[in-house]
Structures are given as structure tokens and as C-alpha cells.
Length: 536
Image (cartoon, rainbow, N blue to C red; front, side, top):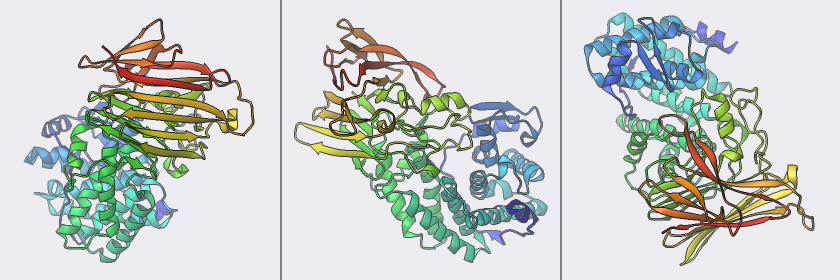
């Protein structure tokens, strides 16, 4: 009913556009030539349209189609700064309006896609309108109006989750840059303030706990902040505060090689994009070390950095990309990533994405290959939309600092229902960054209860640049970093296995790598001490 009512609306759209917000995403003018030739490289897929409209073709994946329908690629045409690119851009927008211009049940009218398209059209309006005839100008403004009314209806209709925040950003930006929407601009600003308060936690993390979400939000919030200033309109304090809090949180996730830690849906880091966002940090804020609301900890001693997940799964509406990686950690030594999580592959790889969400794909302890949070089968597209069904309800963490070391002590009860066990983990880094030691312990959830027999594995996934080999009769592992530094892993006399693993967050696709694994039984060996130390 909603879609029918929106499609029946007659709107003239904005009276006119008064400013075009800056799109701070990186652009490449050479891609404009590819688009003109009919090649659309989107969502890890390349489609050759062979002269046909891309909007009438069968989509190779939902990810490709969402990127196409979101029109973010218009920035490459604008970067070309040519009459040909402008004509091509108008032709493609006209094709879309003819094929998908009115709301319907297609993916093109998913609220998150509509929000992205509205932001793209407004920011790239100089490209589209310079040299345009009166008819295209009128159709374009009507199209903008239809998008604005659609998102207004979705917001009033109870749109939830991350989509609601991005819709509020798009509505605020579009009405701020237009004439004729004064009342709606104020309403959109209130929606934006409400969602920022709800979704950006006091320590600057997003409620969904995915580092990539912070980048995506900053790419839209920074231009919005600039647009408020350009219109000489006071920005909501919630917007200013959210940006200020998010910058140090982004730095918490940042490894010395400028990649972001692979937690809760984070995949490939685009280093140019991250650098662009951080360049707007006028205060050059230091990374936050203790983020109790977001559930993360960081230990940073120069070239040695440890980042740990000490939080519970996010609320269901924000958990579609979340991973069962509670108490997992990543470690950089000598400015090189050493221990990692497997990361998130591109979304079209459904089976791999489901596997990447399991506890076994993280550098932590896993019991009987069972995830610490319950993930629905077919999490990539089931009726639950990938939401986590249940997980740890009690996750505790504390930070201990002394002149000699910094330690993190944490625990979770995710294995309580199935095995009656709680996982406790302590990780400490020496003040010189030359020793990282840990203890993993399984204890009965109920006091005075005998430990259950359950097989476990403590996994330490290694970055593809690290080479590992068993030494000392499989009592240790030798690790060679890309620059030749040697480190040794011990596990207090237990057998140390070097096994195969997969790394999903490489720019060139899935890569084979290795993992260190210590196997045990919860009743026979409930506690394991381990350490990384420099080798010879």
C-alpha cells in the first residue's frame, strides 16, 4: 500500500538546488571511459553491457545491482570533467528513470538503496545539470522529489536499523541543499539527531559493532556537516558530537599498516578512503584504548598493537553482519599484522560469508566447532536476514595497567547453554611490546560443578604475509614476518599445530593462509597458557 501511494504522488520536486555537497569518496576519471564503453565494475563483478542499458540487464549479484542502483559511480564521471561524461551521465540517469523511476518492489527501491541514490544525485547534480535541457532538468527535480517523499514515508512508517540512519542522513542532506522543504528539513534533522543518539555509542562506536559502518557513516556525515556550514544553518549538536567521538574510535581499529581490524563484518580496508576520512580529524585525536560501550580494547606500544573484541553481539536489528567472535583478538608486531581474524568476504559469496561469521574463523577459543553466538542457517539470506539468534548475555572485561605491562581480562557465557562452560581470557603485552602472553580458561558456569568433557581449539589465524612452521617437536611454532622478523609461539608444553586457514579480507580475493591451533579437552586441560616472543 505504501509503495502504491508513493508511486501515485505528483510532485514537482524541489524548487531548485542551492548547493551541491562534496562527495569525499575517491574518484578515478579513467573509470568514466570504462562506463562509456559499457563496462560496470561494481561489487567485485564486471559486467559488459555491450551497448545496452545496464538497468535492463540481469544482475550478476545483489551487491552489483545495489551499487549500480545507488549511482555512487557518478563521481568517476564527474572527475572526468568532460562534455562526453556529462552527456553519458544524463543518459544513464534518464535510462534509470524510464526503467525504475517510480517506487516498486524491486531492489532499486530498497530504502538503503534509495538513500544512497538520493545522496549521489544531489552531490553529483553539477555533473548532471550543467548543459542539461529544460526537460531533463524538470524530470530530475521531480525524481529527487519522489525520492524525498519516499524516504519521508519510510521514516514515518517505522523503518529501523542502519537503514533508518542512512535514510535520515539522505533526507537531511537533500532538503538542506534544496529550496522548498524548510519544514521537512527540520523534521529530518530531528530524525537524524534521534538516530545518531540511538546508534552512535558514547565511546564513538556504532551499535552494530562493525568498523566498516563507521567509515560509511563518516563519508556521509562529514559532507553533511559542511553543507550545514555552507547554508549558514546550525547543525544538530548530535551530528557534531557523533563525528568527534567516531574519529578516535576509528583509530582504535587501525593497525600500523593502516588496515582496520577484522571484527563483525569488516572486510577489505580501502586505505585511500580511510586516509580521506582521517584527514578531516582536525584534532588529530589519539585512538581510544578502552571502549566499554562498543566492547573493544586496544593495547598500543608503538610498533606492537593488540585489538580485542570484549563485547556482546549487537541487538538483532543491527546484527545481520555481526560475527560470533567474542574475545577474539588481532595482533600487529614490528608494524606487521601477525594474528588476524578471517574477515568478511564480499557479500555475493554467501557460503563463505556464513563460514566467516563463525567462531572458528576468529582468533579465539571455540568449543566443538560450535559458534559462541547462534547464527541462523543460511545467514546470508534466510528469513531472519542473517540476524544473530542469541549469544553471550554476560560479557565482562577489565583493563589492568602497570609499568611492566597492560593486560585485558575478559569472559563470556556464550557456551553456557550448550556445555555449561564460560570462557575466560587474559592477554597481556609487555611495556616494550616484545612479549604477548595469554591464558584461556574454561570453567563451569555453575559453582561446585565438575567440568564437562568438551573438545576445544584455540585458534590464532595468521595474516597471509606470515609464514609458520612447527618447531621443537611440535611444541612451538616459528613465525616469519614479511620483513624477515622472527617470532616464536609457545603453549606451555602443549602440542602446537600449524594448519590451513583462509583470509577473506584481501583486496584480490580470498587467500590461503595458516593458523596456529592448540587442541584440548575442557575437563582434562581447562587452562592453557601461551605466548608470542621474539625469535633469533
